[in-house]
Image (cartoon, rainbow, N blue to C red; front, side):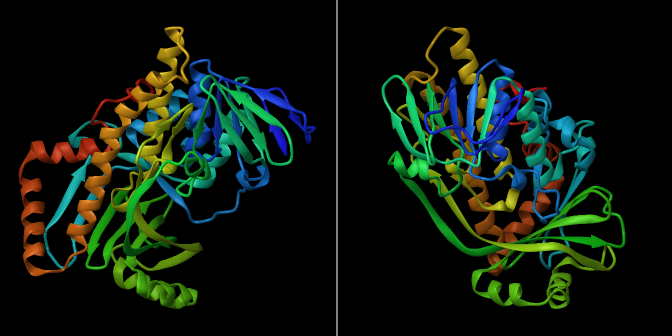
Length: 416
């Protein structure tokens, strides 16, 4: 296990080692790592327990995975000192074009209809992982333990005490679980999850194309599910191809030439010839949400609290909203001299995020069901809806502001 702080990188600690901080963050991925930086912004200390080795966090090899970063998420990353590490690798999304399968109707959202800023940026996950690792190493408020795992978490009325696998303990006022959809911390706390599978799988890959994408994101709604083409730096795009679950094993078994041919049938030729670069990934799609996101001395954030269909590209952005809300709630409690692990403080976080998360989950679920249906009356309703949005400027601006993350009660770090 390696400990990193602003001052040093130390070798393996002895079993009796004890770390103390305001907050224990379980999981140092994109959400957990950003949370540590956000808490440090307000002078709060944290210990981050991350299962991956530093070499994995710093992996420079292209792995094909990328995330959409909304305008408000960018503001958060700027405020906590992460954006400057990734800015040169982030590709702006200036326009979004939405089409419905065989219909000639489409929606075109242009960023300059609502302001000068892009809708957001596409960023390869590897760059944000590396930025988080380096940034946390600069912050005296943060201790990163990696690779490390919480073997046992004891939560009393006044504090948490975590025993680490392999030795060592962490004491803090509370723990925040950022350990993914299958969160062991959530399971250990007895927090139930509600959800369902869609019978769909997302195939994720990256292609290089002959013609420039001009920073335009495309979302084609096909009978099997949405097919998204998202601009990366250069003549490259990230693909999120939603397909029926039963068909995916055969598609993934194709060699690169066969896979590219199958991909090209959906991609089209508007960007010229395409070439597959990097690996491909397949993820079964489901919706899930925790029945509650707080418990005694515990809060959930990111995928441990909610997981959704990628139809709107908002998964990471929802997690970063959790981060910004937690930072505000704890900073306010600290300023008031209150114990920010107490139930009343955590209840504020739950109230704040519950409505926003529920609305986003419902919206993505409804959109997927609506646009993954090829029944004629449903297709007609979709076409009428697309036409209506195109013809009503106020409604169109509402959709665009939603894509930028500008709706709802924004935490301070996302207001710019």
